[in-house]
Image 1 (cartoon, helix red, strand yellow):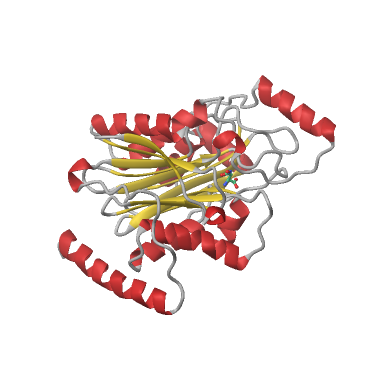
Image 2: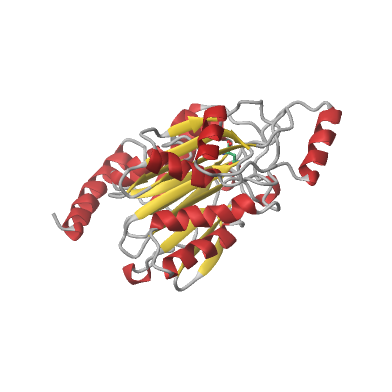
Length: 332
Ligand code: SD4
């Protein structure tokens, strides 16, 4: 079946599904932020979470300019945030856990439904590249902790001290304060980076990488390395990724939910809104709760939605780059 025919059928079925959604009270408010709907001629497209996504997108676009795939683009893109100590919730220079150690979570998915992931990984600068190795070099999807570290070392990655002097000081202050762990999202406006992209051939890929919540319990793993929670890509339909309080994303399998809603015909914007609403419908959220989703469908349409104000995403194609303030449920 031609791609165009497939798309038309999906659109038709989707229209019916959206109609049913309205009837049963599933539909949500329409997109309010300006629709960014790039023409097919303007593929590739890359979007990523937060303002550090701008630099990451730039690296991804350079990969595309050199003829690279969506998979190469998302890997190289998020490596920028992983290596940047100014990005304090991803990779090197990230906030440590409650024992003072920086532990990293990351995952990657390609256009063929392949996935790789690492969790609770210490001392490795680029967990996203280890996740890609898990995907490409092992029959597994996820490696954690010591096993993930040993695998990375076997693959030639080197041990790196990820705790910067600034974070060591932050940790010591936090420890001395006797403060108990509490989730804080929108941390200095640059949390987890999730990136999704569609290349010139229309193939999609995604990557998600984080040091997780600051001062989390040792051993805690969030949504970011969990396929379907922090990231999901289905090359037939679209892709989605998450940032914010991972526990809520895990309980609702947010990125998978968004892709499945897009499969049923919801726009990326509607699907992101539904996924945030699902969380609020299913659980009690605290005052400083935050979740942000971004999504991209096969046609290159973009959606984004957050629980609380403050979330931004970065957009890039050949014609433009932009940092976009995302609408939030709290501000509806
Ligand atoms: C986590 N979702 O570990 C990540 C952290 C994050 O905004 O995105 N914070 O739960």
